[in-house]
Figure 1 (cartoon, one colour):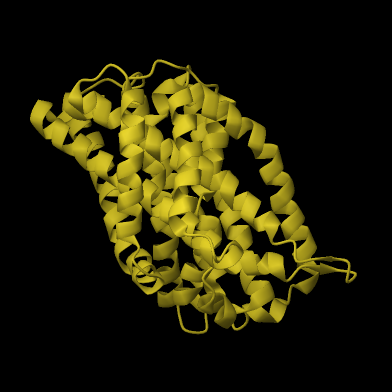
Figure 2: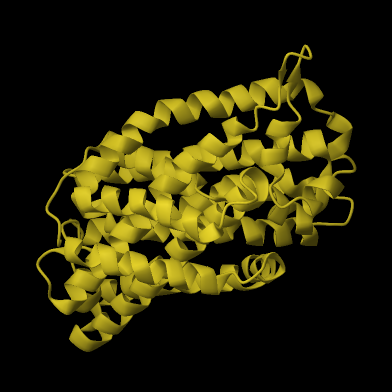
Length: 363
């Protein structure tokens, strides 16, 4: 590893949970309902099993090489040049993912909260915080995640509790009215976000005990699935499938609809804070993984010297990847899933299979 810091299994579990929720908490209800309609909650529940299988794949690969990063054991498995090529592919995936999420923040803030603020200002301000976190090292931003996690729990369950009086069970009917195909289609989009958790393999060697890291990985993904399934189900129950499909940020709209005794209203800032917490953790991990990957590939001793120039490039890439909202919606719904499938499933299966053929003993 480029960075020899260590984090506890508890901190790793929190990072996994917040990473898995990430930007999905705003987008998953709409994307899943677009295909599955009122059966979106079934598509989300199906993702629990797939999430467990993906986690088992990542844990198996990580525990086979417990003290090495994905960039290191790619070379050990596939050889120097092929391993370098696979490492570069992973680095591009991590970087593009971080750039997209940075642009999501800019789009959300400038369309929902601060409409007259230039999006470039939002991107720069948020990226400054990310760069500070990454330069401080994994131990520092893991502690930040640990400190923010209780606030996330409080705000999330307050949101669910306050919106629950508006739940209408009839919004779930008819169940599976159009067969199982739309449900599978919704699940296909849901799994696209779970595939991004392959990035967490980079953090695995930082946990002192691999066995505890494996359990933390599994529990973190289970919690993330619980939250995403909960928010998807509540969005359908409160807003209905037709409205959920039309909204860019259905979870944010849920917070806008909260009204307790005509006194406690319009507390959508709760949803904004929840999303800022999860996205801070997710982008920071992606940014850290990208910096470490480039440093290792180029033979540098310290990844920190890359963080500032990488940030400048990321702002440009973020603006280029999302020229307008329809373009982004099409990209996320039609391209992102097969793109993530390459890095979240095919390449890990390839590495694990070739590693097994080389008869590397499991640690």
